[in-house]
Image (cartoon, rainbow, N blue to C red; front, side, top):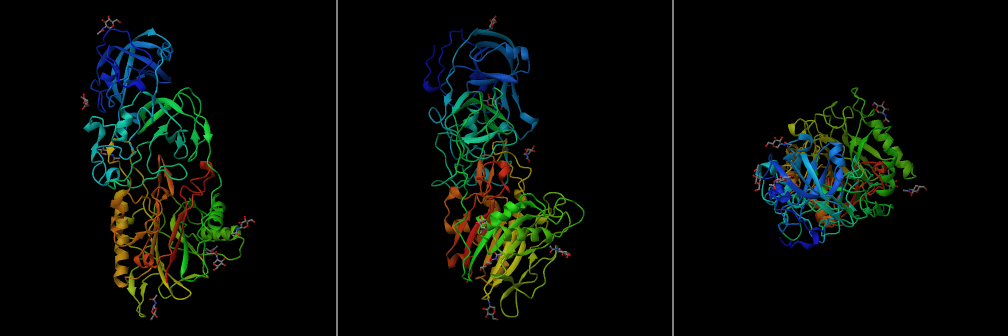
Length: 623
Ligand SMILES: *[C@@H]1O[C@H](CO)[C@@H](O)[C@H](O)[C@H]1NC(C)=O
Ligand SMILES: *[C@@H]1O[C@H](CO)[C@@H](O)[C@H](O)[C@H]1NC(C)=O
Ligand SMILES: *[C@@H]1O[C@H](CO)[C@@H](O)[C@H](O)[C@H]1NC(C)=O
Ligand SMILES: *[C@@H]1O[C@H](CO)[C@@H](O)[C@H](O)[C@H]1NC(C)=O
Ligand SMILES: *[C@@H]1O[C@H](CO)[C@@H](O)[C@H](O)[C@H]1NC(C)=O
Ligand SMILES: *[C@@H]1O[C@H](CO)[C@@H](O)[C@H](O)[C@H]1NC(C)=O
Ligand SMILES: *[C@@H]1O[C@H](CO)[C@@H](O)[C@H](O)[C@H]1NC(C)=O
C-alpha cells in the first residue's frame, strides 16, 4: 500500500481492495481532457461524497500530484441508481468516461464525468472523506486565469479568442493559473472557509465568493477589483482566486446576498458548468455578517469660486419621465453627489421611453429629472439641461428608447459659449479658431464624427464648449461607448476571453482621440474633460491606448487606491466602466479630487439599486 504524502486532504479510510485497473485519477489525468475520454471502465472504486438530482460524486484516495483530481461526477438521471447509493458508501462501478459541455456551447469547457453507470456494488458504508480545506491545504493563485492568456495584457489582450483550452489541452499548472487550480479539484469535496460575497446573487441565487486565503485587489467593501497586478509585470489581475456558489445539492436555498456579506463555511463539490468553476454546496450557508447599510455621500462639494467646478457622472439606466427609479436618482444627485455644477448623464431615454413610435426628443425626460433634483435639494433653483436627439432607433440600447448622453448644468456657474449653432444628430462638430483667436466649435453642442461606422448602433459623443462667468472655457465630451454584448466568460474556452464589442470600442476611442488631438493642436492649453460610461476598464489597454499622452484619468491624477477604482459589479469582479479623463491644462492646475459614490453597488439588495452603475463626483479647476 502506498502512503499518501498529502495528509491534510487524505481520506479518513484506507482501501483494502485489489489493485484496480483504472482509478479516478487515471480518468482525470493531469490535463483538461481525460486520457480515457470515450472509454468504458469497470471496477472503478470510490467513496460517495455527495448526491444531486442528476448524479453523484465519488472520490478516491488522495494523490501526490496537485494537478490530478481524485474526484469524479457520476452522471445519471435514474432514480433507482441514485437511490442505490448513499453518501459515505464505498462502491465499485462501471461506466463510460465522457467529456460533457453544458449548454453544448463551444465557448464552455468540457467537464469530465462517468456516464451510464452500472454494476454498482456497495463495498462498505459510513466512510468519511475529509474535504480539502482551501486556504490551508491549498490556495488558488491570485493573478492569472490561464497559460493561454499571453503577454503583458494577459486575459484582456486583444485580439481575443486566439486559442482554446480544450484544443490545447495543456497539463494543469495549478500553482500559477486559476482555471488550472479549479480544474485540478474537479469533482472533489472542498471547504471554502469564511466566504465573502463579491456581488449580488444572479437570478438563480448563485453568487461569487472568495474564502479565507490570500487575495489581491480587495476593496474596502469586501469585493475584488480588477487592477493591474502590483509590483510585478503590470499584467491585468484577473481575480482567479474566486468561486461561484451554485444551488445547494440538498435542495435548500442560498441566502440573500450583497457585496461584502460573510457566510458560514461552505463545503461542496467543485464542478465546471455554464462557463465557470462552481462549488456546489452540500447545504446552503447562513449569513454571518452584513455590511453597514449607510452609504456615505461624497465629500466633494460645489464651491463659490468661479474657477472650481464639481463634475458628476452617472449612467442612470434607461431613464424616461415615468421611470420608477427617477426620484431615487434625483435624490442621489442632490444628496449624495451634492448637486454638482455639471453632470454627465448616460442612458437618458426619449419622452415616451421604450415606446417605439418615432419620438426622439428627451426634453420632458430631462425637465422631469431636473425638477425632481430641485425637489430633492429643497431648492427652487433648477438645472439647465442639454442633449442632442439621435436619429430614431440608430443609437442602440433598449429598442425604442433612443438613449443618449446629456448634461445637467448649473446655469449660475456655466453657460454655452454662444456663436455656433446647435448640431443635429448627423452634424459633425469640429474645433476651429474663432475670430477672437479662441478655439471654438462649428456646432455647440455637437457630435463627434456621427456618421463614422465606429458609431453604428451606438451613442454618439456629445461635445460642448462651456464658459464660466469670468470667461474661462471648458470643452466636455460625454461618452457612452458600445456595450460588452456577445462575450465569453472569464473562465471560458476562448483565450483570451471574447470581450464583446471591444473592436468597436477601440475604433470609438480612436475617433475621440483624433478630435482631442485636433483641439489640442489649436490650443495646447485647452481645458478638456472626456467622461462617461466607457463600458470598459482601463486595464483593457488596447481600448484606451489612443488616449495615452493625450489625456489623464482623474483616478490616476488623484492617485485613488487601485482597489477603490470601481463603479460596477459583474460576476466576480468590482470594476470601473465609468471614467473621467482630463487634459494637461487641468492636471497642471491641481486641486483635483474624485470619488466613486457606491449608492447602487453597496445597496442591500439588487432591487434597491436605482442603476447598475455607481455615479462619480470630481473637482477640477479650469482657470
Ligand atoms: C489531453 O491530455 C491528456 C493528458 O496529457 C492526454 O492523455 C489526452 O490524450 C489529451 N486529450 C486530447 C484530446 O488531447
Ligand atoms: C471486476 O470485477 C468483476 C466482478 O465484479 C470481476 O469478475 C473482474 O475480474 C474484475 N476485473 C478487474 C480488472 O479487476
Ligand atoms: C471563438 O473561436 C471559435 C473558433 O476558433 C469559434 O467557434 C467561436 O464561436 C468563437 N467564440 C466567439 C464568442 O466568438
Ligand atoms: C418639449 O418640446 C416640445 C416641442 O418643442 C414643447 O412643445 C414642450 O413644451 C417641451 N416640453 C418641455 C417640458 O420642455
Ligand atoms: C432636503 O430636505 C431633506 C428633508 O428635510 C433632507 O433630508 C435633505 O438633506 C435636504 N437636502 C439638501 C440638499 O438640503
Ligand atoms: C447653482 O449654484 C448656486 C451657488 O453657486 C446654488 O445656489 C444653486 O442652488 C445651484 N443650482 C443648482 C441647480 O444646483
Ligand atoms: C478669448 O479671446 C479674448 C481676446 O479676443 C481673450 O481676451 C480671452 O482671454 C480669450 N479667452 C480664452 C479663454 O482664451
